[in-house]
Image (tube, rainbow, N blue to C red; front, side, top):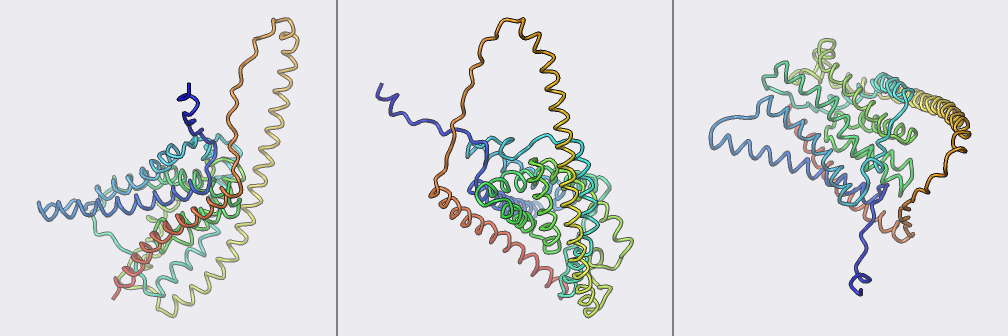
Length: 375
């Protein structure tokens, strides 16, 4: 009897993440990506030194990039189970209406068009400072493009969102609020890619996806925007080099513009980009509000129909015997004290700073390599 009394109770499952869960998810994802990358590179180098076979071909690289996305999904699921958080509820993986899907598609086009000047400003700035991205000398065939497209559109759109607009953003929101959740999850999303050319674009895109996910209380719109944005990017990798064949995107050896011209274009497109993003942000806000209003109207209509069906069944129910009462199992309510929230915030900032420092170290390594590459 004493053993039953003194036996510790099991920790109940939660329906929501907190900021510590978010920071752990971000840190584990970053460490796993970096470790996996160095382990794979080490294995390929050992195989080459021992056997003389070079497996750094386009097929292997494509499969490695696909593995990166699987790591995101595994991290989100394992962290959820480790902290006993219900994955679907905590990540807000909820069905959304057809109106929300349509709004998400329109928002993707808005983001792509209104963020283009800022993306061009970023390209001209890095060309101005002498940064040249790595170019691939691999023999890329058509099926490699297919693998890349599937990875970027489907796997990245889903797996990355499970972490950043899933557990990470909602965990930060529950302790720090909506604005902090959108900004911090977007920062984590942008620096995690460790790509200087994409950092600004991905931060803004992440903020839009976070805002949409929070407003619609579902991660699905963010997945749609992410997937369609990557689809546009995949298409542009084939179209843009034909339009601007001598830019930083396709030709590293001889920049098309002089240093002074790149500096001037950076300033011009930066100004245009800020105005364009302001207008685009206003359109995003209007479209989201319109989508929520439409959803509310459809919900009200659905409730009216449901109530009408209930009224029709009243006469039938009155003639039937009363059903046995259904036992309702109450879930334990977890109430956090102020001290617990303060402790969580401190732990969050420590873990988030470590993960961000690792990302920025890799970011700086990529940047320095880009500067050395043209010397």
